[in-house]
Structures are given as C-alpha cells and as structure tokens.
Amino acid sequence: MLFIALFIKVEGKGPALFKQERPGKNANRFTIYKFRTMLPPNETLSDSQNEAARITELGGVLRKTSLDELPQLFNILKGDMSFIGPRPLLTEYLPLYNSRQLRRHEVLPGLTGLAQVNGRNAITWEEKFEYDVYYVEHLSFLLDLKIFIKTFMNVLKCEGINDKDGKQVRRFEADRESKKTVSQEPF
Image (cartoon, rainbow, N blue to C red; front, side, top):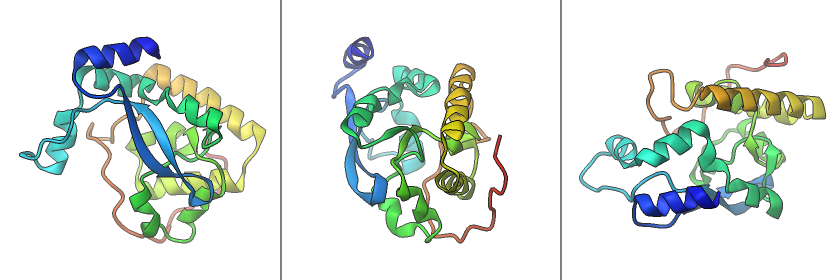
C-alpha cells in the first residue's frame, strides 16, 4: 500500500487517498478510504466526459486490479465495513431507494459482495440491489466463503470493472420497484 501511495504522489498532485462519506449499516455514515484514481474535475467537459478523462493511467490500472480498494482494510479494522457485504454506495442515493432496496443497509457494507461477483458494473442497478437483498436474506458463512473465492477469481480475470459496453457505470437515478428477484443461489 505504501508503494501504491508513493506512485500516486509521483504521478500527480493531490493526496494519495480519496475519502468520501458513505452510508453503512443502518445507513449510519462513515468515511470510506480508497486510493485516488482520478484528477480533480475539469469544468469544461460534460459529467460523462469528465469522469473518463479524469482517470489517471495508474488509476486505470488500480481500478482494473481492484487495488484502489485496499485502503478499505482500515474501514474494516475500524468496524465500518466487513470483508463481504453490499458495497457502500453514495449517500445521495439513500432517498432514492425503495423499501426493498433499503434492506441492503441491514448489514455492514463490504469490500466485496454478491453483486460484485455476479457482474459488478456490467449489471443493472436493479440487479445489484436484488443481489444485495438476497445477501441480507441468506447471510451465512458458506455464502461469504463462495463470494470470497469468486472475488479472488474475478480479480485475477479483471472482470466486470466497466459496463457491457466498456463504459463507466452510470449513476443511480430513480426509485424503482424491483421487478426481478433472485430466488435461488446466484452461482
């Protein structure tokens, strides 16, 4: 982690760590830590152009290998997160969730989760939330073990970082009632 932080500092100005407030268990807010992978916003570009253009060369590698997530080990040590659970999303999404989607906050958020091993950013928001709720409803050591093993395999293959078209994931924008449910174990 020290070497990654050093390389980030050498690559450009700014802090090595990115910090942001996220909702955790019971929607209690905490500060999440990640390695910084982007440059500051460029106001001359649109939001979608801005996001892609701001990712640094090293940042792209860190994201592809999921190494940008390593500082979240400190969140786990602090008790804000777990190794396995629904990924902590932006606080601005909280008022957009329907009652079923809010169930994702009944457990600690995780470094990896069921949605990440079943498509990560290549699946829809609706599918992500259904995987999160399935996890909450079927919480077990065996499920965590399966997610852990599949996470390791996915990281080695660098799968699911972007959506199906190779673009960055779009923001969650609407309160949608879930039409799809995950009724059986999703492996």
